[in-house]
Image (tube, rainbow, N blue to C red; front, side, top):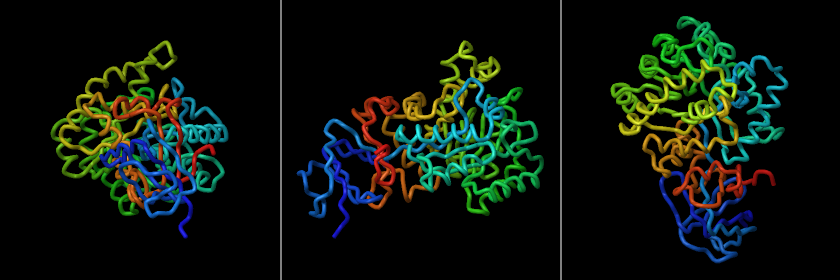
Length: 405
C-alpha cells in the first residue's frame, strides 16, 4: 500500500515550466511530488483512488515550486560595507551569522541557492551542516573562494591568481575543498574599494584555463561581469553564466545565445544601494559606482532578454541592504527589463534549476521531482512583489517537510 501523502487542492498551481492550473491540485508523498492536475478533487480522494493522509484546501492561494536564488552570499550581512564587515569578524561569528541567514532564506520560500563567494569555505561547511540536519537552510550550490587577480575585485576573500597556471591551481584548490561551481572575476566591481567596475581583470587566457580545469572536473563556471570587455573575455573563455551582466552589446548577447550562456541579472543589488543612499552609511564610492552602472545595466539586460539569452534569478543577497529572506523582491525588478510575472517566476524556478544543473530534482512541480513548494496568499501573476511579503507566505515545504513544523 502506498505511503499516505498530502493533497493540496483548489489552488492556483504555477508549475515553473510555464503552465498554470487554476484551480489545480498537487499530491505529494514522502519527499516527492506524485501527481498534479487541473480541476477540483473531492476531499479524501487521490489520483490513484487512495486517500492521502492530509488534505489542504488552497482556495484563494497559489502553490508554486520552491524558488531558487542563483546568486547569494550567505556570509555577507547586508550592512553598508559587507565585505569590510566580513573580513573583520571572527570566523565562528561569521559562520553563525551565515547559518541564521540560511534559515531566513529558506523560511522565505527560497529552497535552493547558489552561494558565489565566501570566506574560508564557510559555504561548503554550511552545506554539509544542512545535509546533516545540524542547521536548517536551503539546498546549496557552493563556489568557495572566487578566483581573482592580485588586488582585484573580491581579493579580501578570494583566491588571488596571476597567469593561467596560477588560475588552474586556484581551481584545483577549490575542487579539493568541495565546491560545486567555480567563480571567476572578469572585471572590477562596486564593493571592493578602489576597484573600477568596467575594468577587465582576469584575462581571456586566464579564464579559459580555469574554465577548462573546472569543466574537466564536471563543474560549472560563473563570471562576475560588470563591463563589456570582461563579458566578452568570459564568454570567449567558455563560461556558463555571467553574473550581473552589466554592459552587454548585441555582439556578446548573440554569442551568449549561440553558446547557451546564462545571465543572472541581480537587479536587487543596485536597487538597494541607491534606495538606501549615503545617509545609510554606504560608502560614497559604492554609491557613485552604482549610479554610473545603473542605466547601462538595464539596457544590456533588456537587449539580452530580447535576443533570447537564458536568464536565472539571482539577487546578490548580502550586499548593502539586500537582506537575506527578501530574495523574492528580485522578481518584481525583472519587470524593468520587460519580463512578465510568469517569465520572472520561470527564471526563479526551472530557469535557475537548469543553470545550477539541478533541474532533474527541483525547479518545477512535476511527478518525481522533490517536493519543494511555496504556498502564498494571492496571485503572484498579478503582483510578483507579494512573494517577498512574509505576511503572504502560508507555507514552505522542502523535500516534502513543512519548514518550521
